[in-house]
Image (cartoon, rainbow, N blue to C red):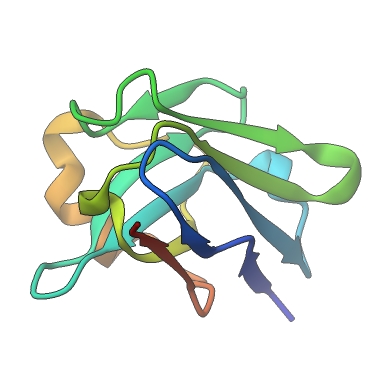
Length: 129
């Protein structure tokens, strides 16, 4: 059974860091694109970062450039999202999901929530003082 489980969310002060984990089971995640998505209150779910089967990454945001990075731990079948310099606007529920082998181009960002499958349940990130 294909399953993705996110963890690592929590309450952090502005400027702090969190590392989210997406533990995959039922399939070898290294052969698939894994995307991290965020849903903030009142907004649609949006793609943040994606890592493809060749470990190349695609960043779908401008505000997070240099603050967020995505990486794999193939031994643990896990994909991480490292978030540094967190801001209040980063507050939301973070999800990971499985795509095909390649990450979509940035121009296709809006379509990604509909083409990625096997979503996790999400992990809440709250940035507040």
